[in-house]
Length: 123
Image (cartoon, rainbow, N blue to C red; front, side, top):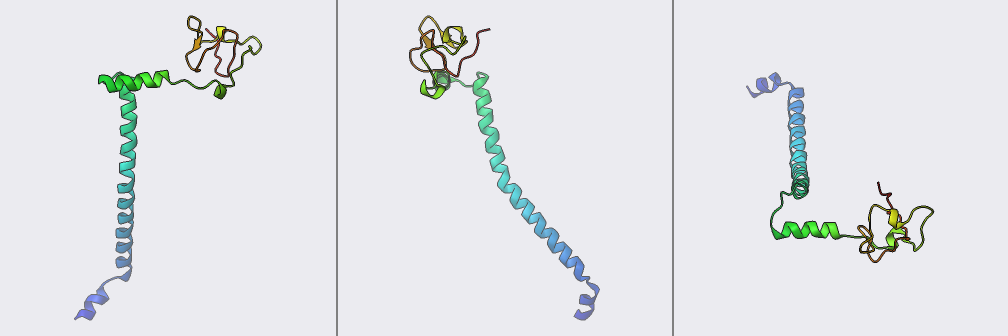
């Protein structure tokens, strides 16, 4: 009697079903590994957007914003030089603060006739 049951089965159906099951398992495993990584990326971006929009509150958010705004680059990293480069000099730059002889993006004292690669024309 068991011989009749085995003869009625098509061997290809069993192989196809097991392949399908295997592929579904692989797909499920792959998606389960990618989902947490995708969600973590969304969370970190949402935090940045909320802070930029003023969504952050309290002293910690204010300190983080102040640190981000006060970060300046070294004079060496922007090829700062003590003479102008042609017509380009700090007193014609968008970032130069004449009242304090400083720059918004470069550390240290800056003279009006200096130049760096951060030079941006005043508009």
